[in-house]
Image (cartoon, rainbow, N blue to C red; front, side, top):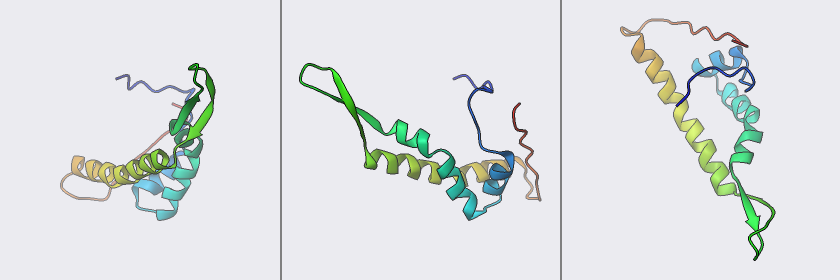
Length: 100
């Protein structure tokens, strides 16, 4: 797995990510809105004709919901991992720099 930052792949603004990590519920909605086109593209299934030629795509609502569910489920896990790294519990600041 390549964990190198790629500046060509857009990421949400740092203020949104910080709000998300601090438990701001409206940030969750903004994050899902930000990634909606990526989620939809990931849930797209090609439709093939009898000859195996692609005729279009079908966006699976079930698959889209599963992707959203996994994103929502991962947010508390990320918060927990960050807090565990900072034992004993104390206030913390996460700095996320845009465009690095």
